[in-house]
Structures are given as structure tokens and as C-alpha cells.
Image (cartoon, rainbow, N blue to C red):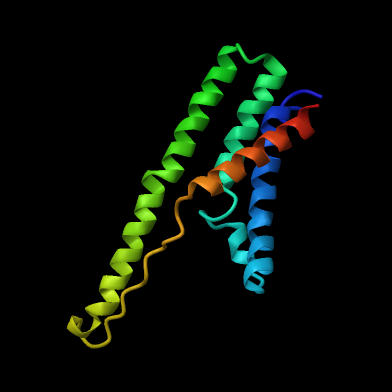
Length: 147
């Protein structure tokens, strides 16, 4: 097969993303005993679907075209930036959103009557274990799709 349908690197990234998102729903069901289908489209949480996707992409490219190929280098650098962003900038933004939400609650008495600010989304980034789990998932997915 050729074209998009036969692009194993692309399929490996897509499959890793879908599996990670489904795992998020399953983990909420197991740990919190509630069905949370909204987790299929949410960012943040265990495992990191962004990390699973870019790791699957880089791994599959390495397997298909060689670990010394320029294509693998591009995918690896791209992936490392995504993982750094997930544990750094996006995680910090989530922590700031938590702090702002708490301040809004504490200062609610200062707002005009009827003013109800919408809470900021706090589940944005990832912890190191969430990124690690995403990386393992991505590598395993690439191996299963490519080999």
C-alpha cells in the first residue's frame, strides 16, 4: 500500500493517540469509579497522548528508515520539544489556572451580583510519570504497528 493509507509512521502515531485517550477513560473508571467519556478529547492526565503520539512517530520512523536518518532526527527533536512542553509550560499553565480559580473563589464576595466567572481549565500539562507512560505506550505501539 502507498500513500496515507500505507503510511505506517502516521498510523502508529494515530493508534498511539487513540489508545492513550481510551486509557484515560479506563483509568478514571478504575480509580474514580465513574465513566468520563469527555476524557477522550481532553488534554492532560495519564498517560500523555501527545507523548505517545510523537514517540510512536519517532520510533516508527527509526524502525522504517533507520536511526541515523534525517527523518528520524526531525521526529526525535520534534518529540522532545513536545514532551518538554508538556511537563514544563503546559503543566505550569495548569498550575496557574488552579491558583487563579482558587483566588476567584476566595474573592467572590468582591464581584458584582450575578457575576459568575467560568473556571479555567486546569488539566493541561503532565507530570513526569504521565509523560514516561506515554513514551512507553508510543514505543510499544510503533513496534506493534511497524513490525
